[in-house]
Length: 492
Ligand SMILES: NC(=O)C1=CN([C@@H]2O[C@H](COP(=O)(O)OP(=O)(O)OC[C@H]3O[C@@H](n4cnc5c(N)ncnc54)[C@H](OP(=O)(O)O)[C@@H]3O)[C@@H](O)[C@H]2O)C=CC1
Ligand SMILES: CCCCCC/C=C/C(=O)O
Image (tube, rainbow, N blue to C red; front, top):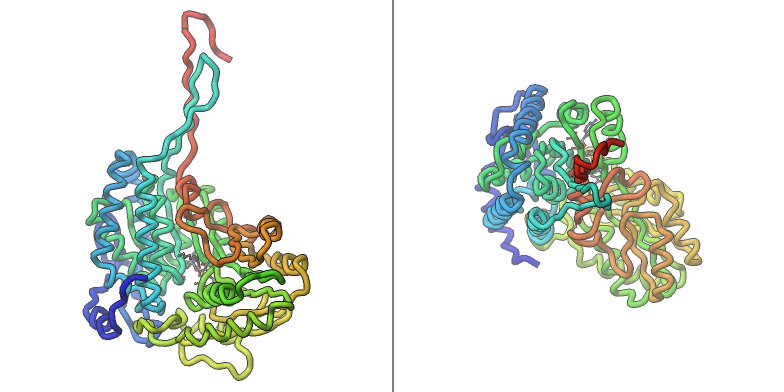
């Protein structure tokens, strides 16, 4: 874990923050022509900043500049080694300013500073570096074509990419999108969630300082209908990469279908199961993972394991251990490094989550302490993506029943299985319909492994790994006739 500063030191950084307040277009901050928007500190409800949002002309200008930059080729056709060096320089700038970025992220999103410093920031930087390093190490292919021809199969950057982001991991999701897209040579326009624009704006500025040319990385603050939809419908945007709710994700398919058939990749919601079977070993270890899986990031996580599906034989000892671990998980002031849970993102979301609390359980403003409820598998707590610190526990009597319950959802993002038998683990991993299945642990894999969902959790591609790079490229076949023209007619 990164060395944390004290609460007072974080407060001093917060007091001194220089916050970005306008769209970043064509290499500079410009006065946005959209309505002013207050961004609030979720923990206090106080105004953090008033941001000038992007209006329709800003969206058009950003797309025009992104297109021009792409066509000029200073980035898209640059030596891949140059793109690598520039992105690594960006990471260096982020490293220098990591405390400032971490505090900005915490103030803007309500996330606990210990996570911003220990997870979001280092993971975002590692992600950018990982993709930067791939830029000059990817080879194209030749295909079998016989003696008289050569067939090249090459990947080219797809063009102008709009990245529409959620509020739960503002910086990390930014990195998951811009890392591979910029490394591949695309121009990227970012639409952060309206609640959390701060770190995206600052990263765009740092990227430009590091050498990302004008128009290649732009950030347009504003809400979904004003900025997300026009990007989704724009005739000169080649691709949308989206992370957020399934409902909004589906809209982007409509926008694409009603405009230019742009490519759309969606990373959407989840109601992910942690399946603990009768033969699970070391219940202390299981409890540690289950607690982290359900409550990390206040449960505001598409890959949160919010359903614990547990065999009746191990339920009681596991529940005891979960309750014991939760005593160490403190909720409160996000800038206090002692706290594991901060504030929920905003009042509307808080109201939604509170609607799932049991009678008698109450929030403390935007703070909700972890809740564990035993429920039937059809209870809304067990079926809905709550996106809050609520773990729903469903008891089962067999492995088959556990797998059936795990799959009884319209989502399929992640799942975890705890068992001591390799065969059971492998069968369960195969039978659960989800994009990531972890065995005897909870997680999302790492930067090298693809992340995305089955069913209504995802569409069209994967974040992370080389699979992410591939989704920001088009495949082109170049067929070269090598036959000797003297041999006569080689047509057909
Ligand atoms: N998979 C995930 O990681 C996430 C899942 N969710 C789920 O979604 C629920 C609702 O959260 P919410 O923030 O509303 O998520 P959304 O899916 O609505 O938001 C994600 C992004 O899409 C944008 N957007 C919203 N509406 C439109 C639209 N009509 N056209 C184009 N873009 C749009 C948002 O902009 P803006 O918000 O600025 O209007 C935001 O940038 C949560 O409770 C949770 O269950 C939420 C966030 C992340
Ligand atoms: C350190 C890995 C964090 C992964 C978070 C994945 C969540 C994605 C989402 O909620 O969209």
